[in-house]
Image (cartoon, rainbow, N blue to C red; front, side, top):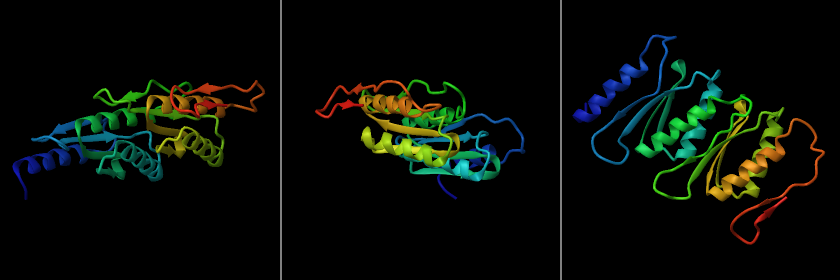
Length: 203
């Protein structure tokens, strides 16, 4: 029971989520009437092999996009959300990046939120971290040194997702490249210079 728009989206969600197992599924979206949080999306995460991996992916994307309504269906590895069009687009990009976990040279260009703001999201792949402890140590260094408030880890895929200014994201990328090495780093010390602030040199 609800408005015609609510009943329509409920029927659409039922059709999307109640599918035969093994059926090939692609991202689908439904736009409700009005403005604001009127975009409904259903995403499928075949890369999530366990319930924990599915929950980690959902937590990462929900937190980085600031989406209030996001829920998973474990049996079909589906995620449904309701958000703004911009949030839905960022969520789709993040899920696509998480699917690359474990690939060599998987890091791609970051995602810039529309509107001309210095608001960048990036997914950093750390394939050489052998243990959860090593992976978490690098994530803590990136969060602390780059002073990034929005950083979330996808442990099973060795992925860190960050959101901040272009300066912060560039530093996070540099730190990830320096710290996630296949062995002991025997080279000379390297430096990164940020474009703003007094404490703008990192070594």
